[in-house]
Length: 171
Image (cartoon, rainbow, N blue to C red):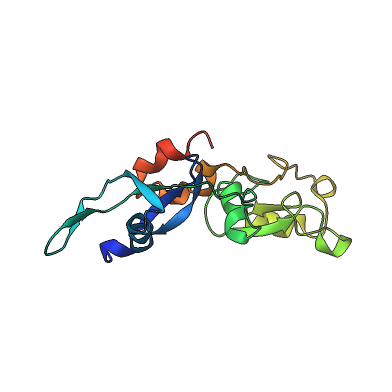
């Protein structure tokens, strides 16, 4: 385990909307400058010679940051995550996994959320340069963009920071 100042802190907007994650070091700077307030101290204290400071787990900005809702970027990791690391043709889970274009690239199929799925190598090879209908391999679920709510965006942090769950649910 690293230094406590390098751990992560959930940053909430002024209206308690989850914004992003920063380091404890950055969060303590925001608290010290009075730009944020401590919402949850789940980690104890940092002791100096003359004082002790709570190590934040969740902070809230004292103002509202107006910004467009973040979008989840299309990447291999996010496609696997969206499809729960499961082949969308046969249902096999786990590695090795590949990415398959529902409408093949050679036929003008774009690389978009609605045209890529997780596939095991055997199904990807069997489907080849055909559509699922032509190959007789129906999809288990039609591909679509992943949900854009906070619990999905920050879920990979929850194993180590379960105390964040109440702040992520409902956004």
